[in-house]
Image 1: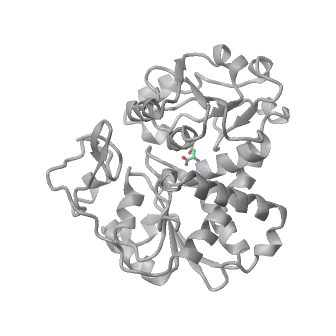
Image 2: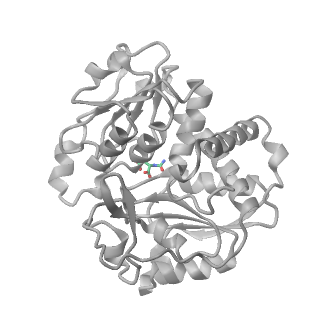
Amino acid sequence: MLARNLIDLNQLSLEELDDITDMACRISRHPSHYSSACRDKLMATLFYEPSTRTQMSFQSAMLRLGGKIIGFDNPGATSVAKGESLKDTVIVLSGYTDILTIRHPVEGAAMAASLYSGVPVINAGDGGHLHPTQTLTDVVTLRNVAGRTDRLVIGMCGDLANGRTVHSLCKCMARYGGNSFVFISSETLAMPAYIKEYLTGCGCQYSEVRTIEEAMPYLDVLYMTRIQRERFTDPDEYEAQKGVYVLDSKKMRLGKPDLCVLHPLPRVDEIAYEVDDDPRAYYFRQTLYGMYGRMALIIRLTSEHGHCVPEKPAADPDFICANPKCITKVEPYLPRLSLETPKGKVCAYCEHHS
Ligand code: NCD
């Protein structure tokens, strides 16, 4: 049986992930066959952070399945503005609905929500931590456009420090045989140590370079990302980093004929508009695969799990997460929870060490 919540895509076995992406492919061929798959189901979208694609694709997905939606994308217009905690909002909304989707600026927020929700919770992005349904989107896209999810050389470029999409994607693609990574970033925006440790633990190879040009000839996939302005504490630091990496037609000429260029979007300036006409640019098709992937995920979670009392995991009172961006720092009632990993204990919410 599928895990009740989707907080991290690695909660799914590869077989379960393949089942969901198979279903997404079937839905993309015959969407009308699924038009009442979620009739009488209600989804709440709790968006504490701006979103276009993720929010709208979840909403389109549920409506196309015959379900209904409620939610907010402006927490300032809800009781959050009066100081309501995440816990209280989640308890109330999970009582009204059959599934919750949450996006939050703080790392570990989706995991925290799952502790109090009586219905399945989907992580639609928690700060700079993870974005599993974007990764589901990426996997469905790769299956369709690259024809495989293994034996790929995957370049990732841009804000690898703060980009949750690339963190989720690394963790997922490391599980398929023969994939390797080339991280293209400045030193300041390099991939976090915990992701590199994860890759090493999986026996997965990666290298780090400073320019797109030196990586380009070797890549099967180039995953571009924007510099995440909202995650910088120092505006001057953002100014120094922006505009450093721009993919244009000249650089595309160095790429393989079957290169696949992806981007979770929104784009700021990291892909020149001229690249849109290159047949290797798949980022707009990627958004469509995201809706089909989310349709498949909603069907699976709502058909396998109903309302229930959430489980209370065993607390680890001595564990104090060292990450200042962790949800435990802003919602202090949360129990301290840790996970054992080969590198020692990490925070169960945001995966940082104590
Ligand atoms: C991404 C996100 O929100 O992390 N966008 C998305 O969900 N498609 C990428 C980004 O904002 O840069």
